[in-house]
Amino acid sequence: MTRALISVSDKTGVVEFTKGLVQAGVEIISTGGTKKVLDEAGIPTLSIDEVTGFPEMMDGRVKTLHPKIHGGLLGRRDLATHMDAMKEHDIQPIDFVCVNLYPFKETISKPDVTEADAIENIDIGGPSMLRSAAKNFSSVTVVVDPKDYALVLAEVKSNQATSLETRKRLAAKVFRHTAAYDALIADYLTKSVSEVEPEKLTLTYELKQTLRYGENSHQTAAFYQNALPVPYSIASAHQLHGKELSYNNIKDADAAIRIAREFSEPTVVALKHMNPCGIGSGRTISEAYQFAYEADPTSIFGGILVANREIDLETAEEMHKLFLEIIIAPSFSKEAFDILSGKKNLRLMTLDFADQANNQPEVVSVLGGLLVQDQDVIEEIPEEWEVVTDRKPTEEELKALAFAWRAVKHVKSNAIVVANEHQTVGVGAGQMNRVGSVKIALEEAKGRMNGAVLASDAYFPMDDSVEYAAQHGIKAIVQPGGSIRDKDSIAMANKYGVAMVFTGVRHFRH
Image (cartoon, rainbow, N blue to C red; front, side, top):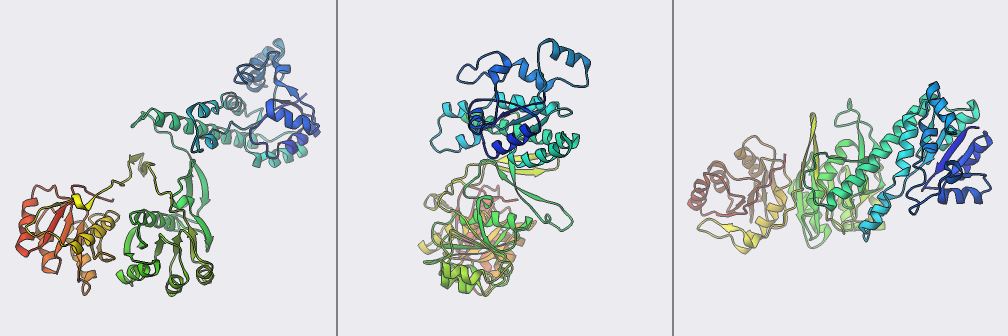
């Protein structure tokens, strides 16, 4: 008689699936809670110890790790020696395996999980059975996902067996599943012993969305989410309205929420092509939006907005005047949503701004490898910056310098930001020399220099940038310092009466 071994943590659909196998003449072996559910449904089952002749022990840790189980899974039906061995040792073939694993991911996701609880939810027998069955896919059908029950039953009903192609696809799915399961365990234990640079990096992500195309229309792409979701991330944002996100939308939205994380006061970030085109902070979110819009009314067109407060009616009415790709906020008032959702393609998304802690390392792909680094989330205290010039910044200038410094770390290097204490007024990004970025930022800021200061993400290698900034109205500069020619920049600042402070921290963003 054909046999199936069924032992699942996720009981979804298992009764209906098992009934379908029984109707096809399959004998059922089951264990523990699964057997109880099937027995209560009136489905006849054999217990594991009836098959192995050996009792479960050690609180169920040892029950399926037995030759009569794994021999039935691994025995090759096309080899006489395997079949003779099975006959000699009274091992019956097991042709169907339906197993899913202890909920390790769900267990370690609990905020109060103990190490003992986590370890107890590491499944051993389940992955072993899955791997044995998947290795022998030429003969064994193995199912790890309830979504595949219908496919298997349909083929069994039509052909009295599954096809080799189906068995191979299901086997591949099993190895992906067990690899991801093991990766979570490896990551948990690695972090528990504070291993910083393990000799092997095991990562696991889950498909969130198939994208229409990638960075360009001829490129295929997909969006994968961390297996342990990060609350403050674009992957965890909830889309309320609009067409699906594109590859470039996701990249830009990620960059925008990173910037918004820098500000606790009501703030709106406008972003275009991975660089902020306007950042505004105000007493209300409406005022913050006006500052962000006025920072660069041209570039904001077709951009992405992130607001760290609820979008109210007043703000929505102003936003509605523009063509925008995405608006992300903690929430939208009903009136605001009604107005903004009138644009069918505008993506409206909510994100939980309460939990912004994120110690996940950044992983960036390069040809043939990955770069891994900590996030650039160092805490800096402006009061501890070093004033290196004869003139000290005024209180108003210091506030503007702090604002500009929070902004410039998110601009592609070479990065220059000109800002006052509540908005950016000029952004120079991604130039091959620093003075080029200075010129772009100051040209953009022309006519809005009242109270403006300048921030540079890295030190000035020459004093030309300082001189150009001073000649165009800049009275205060913040930069990391650390160049062998710092004295030249300081002397130039003193020549023009510019206040300059060193932070001691560089913020390259490539």
